[in-house]
Image (cartoon, rainbow over all chains, first blue to last red; front, top):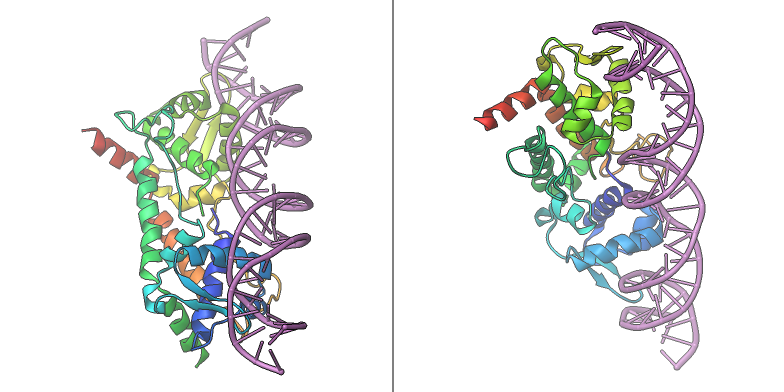
Length: 141
Length: 141
DNA sequence: ATAAACCTGACTAAAATAGTCAAGTATATA
DNA sequence: TATATACTTGACTATTTTAGTCAGGTTTAT
């Protein structure tokens, strides 16, 4: 099990955005340079973030992106969700495979995966962008 | 982020083994039939479990596998570890990329991934095979 | 003897990942 | 108004990972 770059990049980019988000929009080019992420790839990621209304775009020269909500209100779960990085464990019900068809022969570990999903998602739901930026500032002192 | 079949199968197979582990070894063929997992794939998985001393093999007719420790002592973390399914998030130190070389320009989210790893691993470290089998029995009543 | 079951390594099709590339459109500013 | 900056979109692709299969073994209870 691993976290993919897309999810990591999305969080890194937004943390960067949250940190430098004053009045002016932040360009992807700046984020690309600061975080070492390909500009083209960032564009794909921000396209998704915009569709889910996590960021707003400002076109033209001096344009860029701004957060669409307060950093406090943007939870990690929203970010991962936007870039299709939800935690998935099993889909037992898909086909009535041996040992798990949702009925009496429920698979031995069915509930385990549910628990695991909840456990991980709880983490993502508690953490906000603000938490990230704060803790990075604290470390700076 | 998703859990792979290899990890799931390992846990499912061991839960099955723990449940039917009396005196006689349990053959992979039985597990394969009960859990709907390819026999050949199970063999690959059990080869790893054996190398990490989670199970013991009994060769020959009437052979199979038995747990090498008590179900209570086998934690999920041991299982995932054995089949190379450890949770990995980032390896910032690998190359001194922009924004994270382990020094002052530590990447904004570095600590987040550490926290996440710990959070997930805690879950795996707390759960034992016995917990799985128990809860599946309780549900049966 | 022989069949059941473990054991090993090589191979592969399909999917996912991590991008690149190309061709735009919008707009602030000189 | 020319132009450079920056967003926008969609198609394409190389690489890696996953989830197995396949083909050959070896061991041992009966």
